[in-house]
Image 1 (cartoon, rainbow, N blue to C red):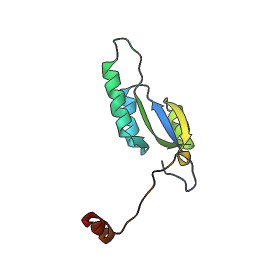
Image 2 (image 1 turned 30 degrees about the horizontal axis):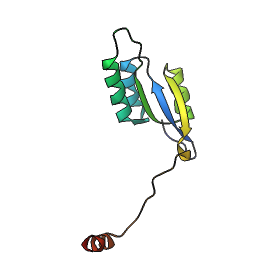
Image 3 (image 1 turned 45 degrees about the horizontal axis):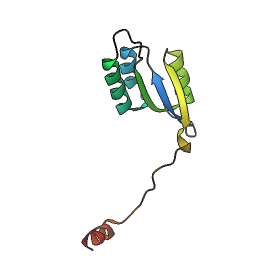
Image 4 (image 1 turned 180 degrees about the vertical axis):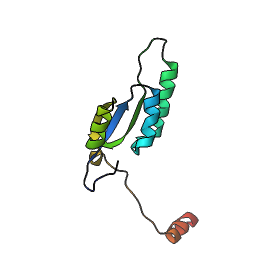
Length: 104
């Protein structure tokens, strides 16, 4: 799924109907957070017998991607538009200056 130039992306939680469907998400080209799927797998493994925990992951997806996931049987919760979250400040420094500051 390609991203249109001005298409908004959202932080999302994606619940798969089963573990096979969760693994199938890898083939869709979505921007998924690997760590969330690993934690979800650990929770599923530790769930009490008979518990109905769904395989879950998180990611950054568009409304179009969310719609397609829902049509394919996934449960999608959109949390917040990605552009609204603050980004960490970036400090740019030249390598030579960085070396001088290390020597001081």
